[in-house]
Length: 270
Image (cartoon, rainbow, N blue to C red; front, side, top):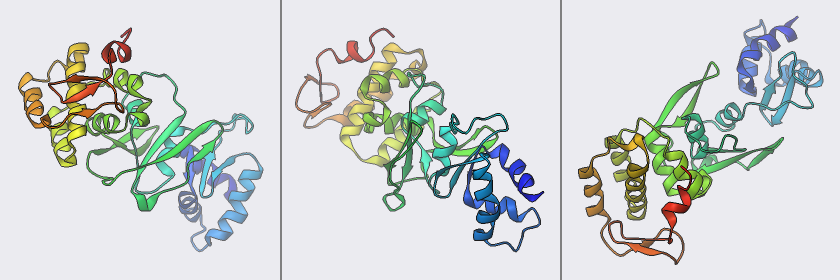
């Protein structure tokens, strides 16, 4: 029965875009079938049977034989990876995929897209999928194997820079820095190359300040050389910036006004 064959072929995907369903259906001796026919004849019936779950238009969760449709929760990373073509997973979502997120569970998934590929934030059974607008969707990304599929995610170096650029997308300063503290294997030459391309002095100051903090507090930053930090300090010179709006004590090395007790507050207990 073709419906069962299609379902069995979909099972390994766990989450399927409609185009993937059409491609699988056409491989089941339905080469001439229209998309409308495939939806009406197979997709709609699989939804009725509780074997597919509509997440949003064109995106479906594939339930296993033992899954309860009322309690089903799709894999958030696969949903995020397939919610918008051309995008990639970044910020706190990338921290999770790189295995260093401080919080064990985080219900917001950040999908990085160009402005022209924007989508409305989606909430599905307690999971929240948000677009994060970026100019470059290729530099600093990698293909990662995940549950037998390939997903596009920010690499470690871009994740570090992006999280410091928008710490709110990384859970706020405490979550951000405690997560970055466990991010091992950074290639600092690559990180500094990405940073140079941003041409953003405020971001450079934040990166330098964070690297100095992390070098003191994490074994994963022991290979960061003082000469590399000093080169950043020279580039950081100029009129000071505020790490947080209109308050703080001046850190002269990084030309940043930093809230009093910032280091103790955000890295407390680590």
